[in-house]
Image (cartoon, rainbow, N blue to C red; front, side):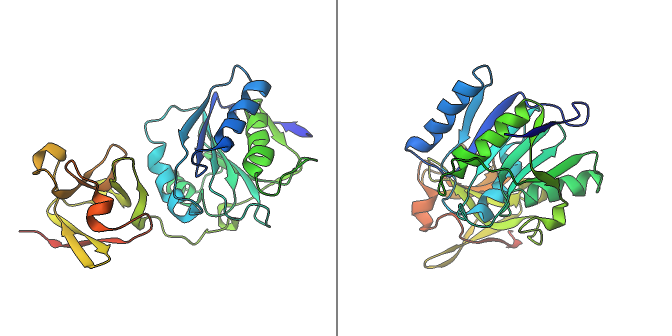
Length: 272
């Protein structure tokens, strides 16, 4: 792979790789881990999440900023939710501060970068974005996570940039016109809890949350945590990722309401 050195002061090398994918069970995560261990045995590679909603970068994009909160700086996030694999979409390498992000140009990094711009302004010193045009000689058209994105990630951890590549601006990314937040269910966890795209900092505990179910809109009140409501009762609360989450005490909220990732939510009138 032809490469060019990165300025270590402007673009510090990541110290670890975290995988964020919709790969689920099977050989895919394992192949990434095995290849990384052979090529960079001293580099930690952590499988952060592998069960994102399949084929839905529009949901993963809004989950990503919250998922990496409180995580260590100096991390490269290898993000692969890629229904357009083998098509014309580009490969991106993005640096925000001391963190890096590698993945497809399908909107996956748009909310993350827009939040960065909203906080620090449009300052090129705070982030850098490249389209990576390099491709390997041997390339599976259906597994770019292994053949394209992992080699790019490993090269960046060495302080080098794959060539050919070109700098690009955020408004050139696919999905650049997406909104800053998403009023829907982004993810259903192991317990059936419903993580939404609503920011908890912007939530009013005196408001109820409406969720669209197969039998119509259902209104849900706020609570601080599970033990504050009777068993089987649904409520919304600030979750560990600072997002609004819908849960039910000792019951699966997804089954209770008959909903799944992608279904809508909305704030209702103030509860009295």
